[in-house]
Length: 385
Image (cartoon, rainbow, N blue to C red; front, top):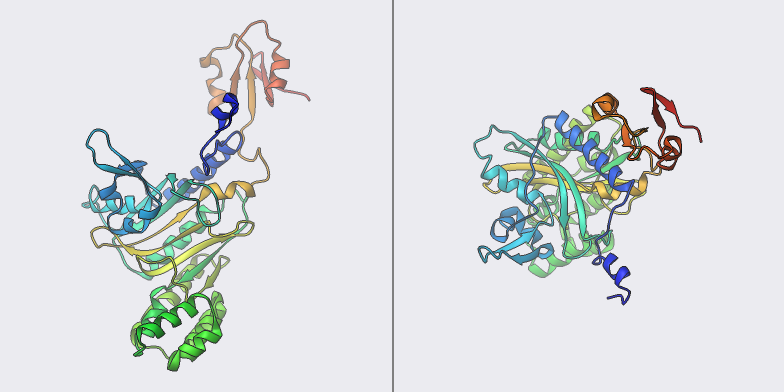
């Protein structure tokens, strides 16, 4: 710790920070924009707790977040509790319990902070912010496409951010093809490692009769239209072809709604999608290293089909160059006005800064507080520089 008490009191744990003006406000505006977009397409807001019992938090889909979960003991019950590192498993719990009798498909949205044991791959932050949607109770290409389409709408924040690109994957595809051959355990391991590393030479070495198909799949990674043309020519087993056809159908459905959305396909990507059962996607944005969102198809806690996507609004803040982009105009209200007299200005969207003493010079205070206007004789007057 630092010897200086004043500095020590300002010290935070690694990965945690204070978010100051105007960044805290900007972050809140970004989240609200996303939540409003989700709501516009029928996704109803839920708000699970930051802390809950470990037994429920890490159940089913939550098993994948165990390593990133802070544990504490509840002094009341002596049961172990966990600080959530991800909100998605909580949504699955809510859908399978408190909303089990709600009509399906169930459309839910959420936003809130999460706490990680260690920083994310492309960020040292251990307190992160998530916002996302889950579509529960239906398994169809159109449901997969809806998640992508609504996500794209939610990321169009006031035209302040660069356009996104979405990378589509079918993690089960490569394995479904490999399982058709009688590879031993070691050869399968080497082949999967080669695919994971995108090593064409190793795939050709260990792929046997599948080397041509798997090499083509590796080389197809890229823009969706090009990838689909290359993948259409493959002679695949029936189960694998069904997975690929599902991917093609989703791409077509997305393009029908949003032809300008940039889509890419990685046919052999499977790392990090352990509990997912179908199409998966990652969201990228120019200027940010790594994903700004990820999601896909999985089974909810009671075995229901579900598809969702989680975004990281906190990663978008550095891309907003204009610190005042979300700020409303400010009005200085000289001492003596009542709330009743100025309530209409607030309803019109102004921020009101009330004078606190009769002796203060109203114009000087207005300038000091960066106000755009001052209220004089019940009318707004512009504050000159």
